[in-house]
Length: 359
Image (cartoon, rainbow, N blue to C red; front, side, top):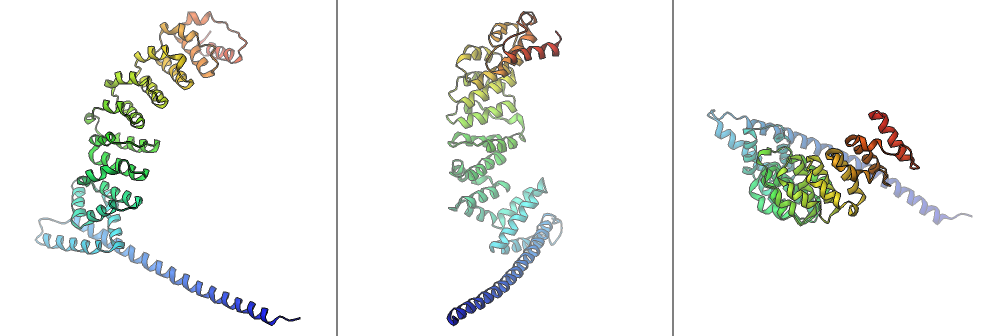
């Protein structure tokens, strides 16, 4: 039994699919060709702009054609800036070249950046409603060291998008160095661990002699600011903050207390020992471990009785450090200890210490 109608439909679909495939193949070929053409044109224009910029930066001011050549080059840049695609190429070329030059040449590039109008488009970016465009605008102003927009950039310090906040923070640090830390006064949102790493990398480039007084930020209501400043205190050896560090040992935030113990351990601030020993029972296990790391550096024979109380602590790390400290600072008391116990871990530690230090 034959079904002519169904056969006709099937053959019609086959023909339509074949035509669609042919059209799609042709379209893809045209698209690939157009992409290659655009890429070729972009590369040619990039080469042209690079050559133009290099020529501008190396103009001989003593030449009689200096002003005319300078004017013509600026005119070419201004013409290209009006086109979005060309403007992107010009901006990227400026950014790439600015990372390869230094000194007076940088200043010339920054002045040219403003003169040809790129600064106008950077300003337009930071007015955008799209967060990624705002971030790009701040990045451009940061990399071309445009300081006059600081009052505008300040409002992005607490932007809802972390990427925008990060660019704003870097803007203030890179352009104003330690003075740029003033953005912390208005910071309300968290500083992620990655943000802190990036900012600390930037801060480490600065001259330590011009470091601001950081004490006020150790009293900040923003816990993330305190944690960040504690890193700065440690990196730049700000021992004048000692009294505030001792106060922070009582802070309600555990992370701040732990970071403070890390800092006082680094500085070997012995006054912290009495505070931590007195409140030992109320400390978390993390703080107790941190205290014994601190004691490994600052303990004396006077601490023997306290340490003795913890040689059979339920935590292996505390027990190990307590026995080590006792062995190091009070050999007489250590030698009176039982060398054998029902606690196998205690026995192993004793055996290891006797072997390492000599019985």
